[in-house]
Length: 64
Image 1 (cartoon, rainbow, N blue to C red):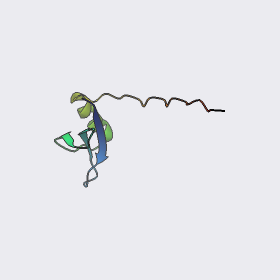
Image 2: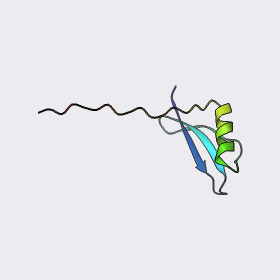
Image 3: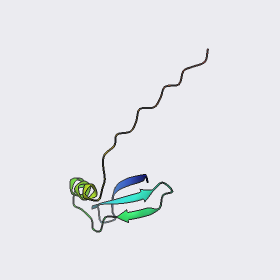
């Protein structure tokens, strides 16, 4: 199953993460907030987050 990982600042200005399904349902959320992004990212990695860079877009040939 594919997930979207969302990293954001909560109302208190601290970082949180969410694991979201492809139909935008929140599956899991960080149990607490983090003072900095690195702490939030480290916890998400423990929960299974892996950075995958976006794939380059395929160039489409132009018809002449």
